[in-house]
Amino acid sequence: MKEVELRSFVSKEKYEELKDFFDKNAEFIKEDEQETHYFNTEQDLRIQKNNYYSKIWLKDGKLHDESREEVEIKMDKEDFPNLQKLFKSLNYDVEIKWFRHRIVYSWKEVSVMLDYTKGYGYIIELEILTEHDENKALEKLKQLFNELNIEITPKQEFSEKYEYYKENWKNLV
Image 1: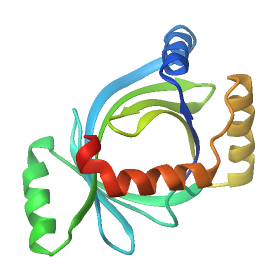
Image 2: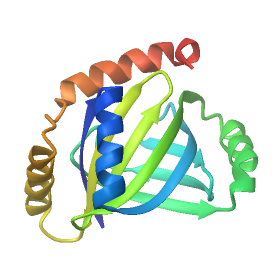
Image 3: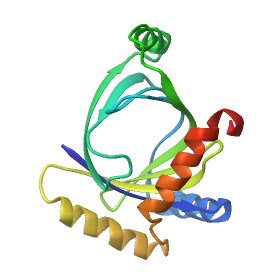
Image 4: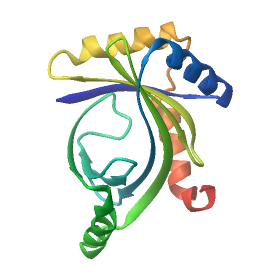
């Protein structure tokens, strides 16, 4: 299964506008508080705890790619301290920690995530999981961004903001 996603930074005002829109026009799925640790590895390896569970998570490809395979192993949220100990004992250093508030909706057969990440900003993400035509899924996401009157933030801008956050996250949070 591949994850096809597009995301964009939005202002706080646009975030609130989108929240109102999706509250009225989409199916609310959940609201969540997440703490994610990215490890300093060649692969995109992470652990996360949220309101529902903990997980180990590996994403193939490059950060901010539109399409990536991922592997997740979920466990009880109380297991998060053990995950931290495990990766620390394996000498994996935490490169970044994210502290995110996420609201998830289902809209037009697409997962919608409205995020506020402390020190990073407000983001809307649209996602489709597919086993087939990634290009078709990507086109649908682009059409929906257009329908919402949101310009897709260029990957370069995400990369620059990510690098800034990576260097400064301890002060930003």
